[in-house]
Image (tube, rainbow, N blue to C red; front, top):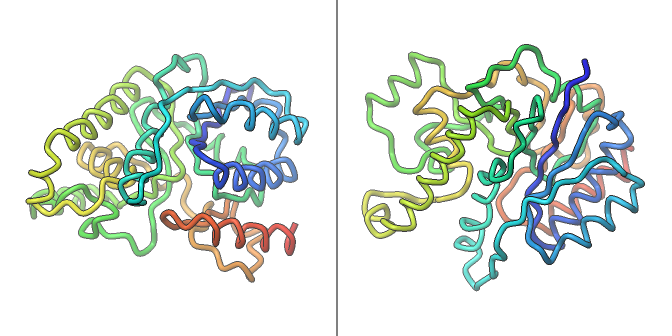
Length: 272
């Protein structure tokens, strides 16, 4: 059971820090974190704030900073998010191959039970990404595709029981194969930037991390949603106690930072 596990988070801005602060509170109340190291995909300006937060919680575990460029928040929130969220695919930009497993997680998440129930699921393979599917997700909705699939592709998903995945929880082995997969996802992003106009003409709606992740992972049949099934609750209701029902509560949603923080606070105060 002496696995080396890396918990990796994308943190950009104070809203992320506030959510991560609550995430840590919940993590420390439920989980012995002695076998975890932490990695932050962030910009230079946030290093000291993150260090301060870790110190506040008396966490002295190893911390790695995966430094990415600063992204300026323009008027267009959507464009900002499109550039920002895909930075999570840079998780293997630095060498983390000495870890057994990496959990690439969102910060708008409260831990209800021991996180080892997620990070230590049985027998995970080198060439696969583990996560959860969304109940009402559909391959024909833009949150889960890059541009519309052909009928052959949709048939392929059906035949292979491939479901759309939530990109807020990605557990993987930092293997050579998976490094290549992340590089391929990043190539999709640069090709989007190069052919933005062309893509818009063929009906692309969103370039969020989740669209790109699903497009690549599903077409290559790389996802496994069975092992984590039933362990993570998406879109929790703030006045419902989910204790003993789930391991993680994910306050899902795009971009609405303030209401996420409010809902997480309410939940923490009420049920922890």
